[in-house]
Length: 562
Image (tube, rainbow, N blue to C red; front, side, top):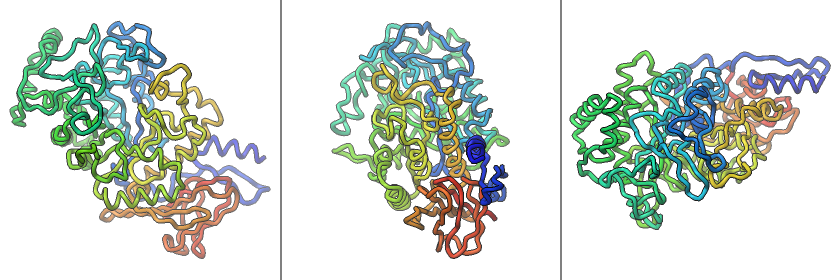
């Protein structure tokens, strides 16, 4: 009987199950949604968001007919070519409820603008722009990823489910030069020197790596559009439209026709036309910081313009969001990034959040050390802004738990640490990060391991991530609230969040003993308070400053039951 019960509990964990204290009459009870959730609207806060980051080409293939374009058929190094994932594949998973079940409230996908057509060998075997960071034309989508209608549908379907959409954008460089992809005109890009990262100058006024032409983002000199781009627009019958739109943009803004402003116009078109909710900005520290403030200004303008025209689709009054990748920025640095000879505050240049490279190291510490540190910093040095925490990503060769030996602990750390959380695709299914034969970051970018969902172990891991993710999504206090330790052994903490009339208060227990356990909540929840443990789907009452649970779980997620 016990084995049957355990199996049923596992399969139905996302819906919830609990064990009767009477072992002679053990039953699986499917509970309704958490009692407190349906009673109050839950405000969305970017500083506590649960963001799912995926490589568009590696997540889900929704349309196999677009798998090959521009004769991209050359043999590549392992995991260096297109594999078929696309925008339609993302939409399929939105409609299936995959993200909703995970408690995801924002999706960040890698760039989908047209990539270089050719392949290039950087010592890793031939590589195509499957990752999206090698732009050839910012004004159109790459057919390997899909088309404008596909993206419009994806955004609409996400919004229908209360999920925000974060578009990955690149402003500071083009794609590499190949036989099919000539270099942009000299007034648009610089091709040397290569960055040495010794100081501010050798990080910003240079090309990131060899054969990755850097956009002249620092200049205000007006330049002409490349002849190749004009010829293409003419051939495709959109020359007049593109030129007219540029004229309107520069007339409205008064900006000079410098390289960065052309690209800013093209990038913010996706916001204006489709209602993109935010940008994740690539390689932030490799451009003059003023460019990011300008990008945000125009993106925010475009977002408000879209909302005025699509009031029936507007989720709420949340402003446009912009998070930056300042490589190696850590939360301990507060508002600034130190180049050695200069400190830059990117939060004062368009960003409300920066990716935090520090959690993967902090994750080796005890829970309380991590949670207290992040709560203190976010409510002092970083008050009013936030960070996006991660444990694994697409280009960090030293992620936490690369061998996926601690998937439950990783979920606890990532999803319960103050700040926003970045779930990298496959974190929740323990996707393999050590692919034999790959070179460099390719090993981090295998196709999503959907087939592993047939495994009982993977289902157990996924169910744990779903439980924590949904709790985080339902409670802004987890990511945006203030932290307080309530009990040392067993470890229990509380989080509280107040924004106007909205108040949120939760308690969480970790590393709990299996079976009967007593959690100390005195001073946080008063005696007589009814709490609901969403992990075991059990309602309990606070008595003598404690709540008592009897279940096989090592986690408790407590919220008000009334």
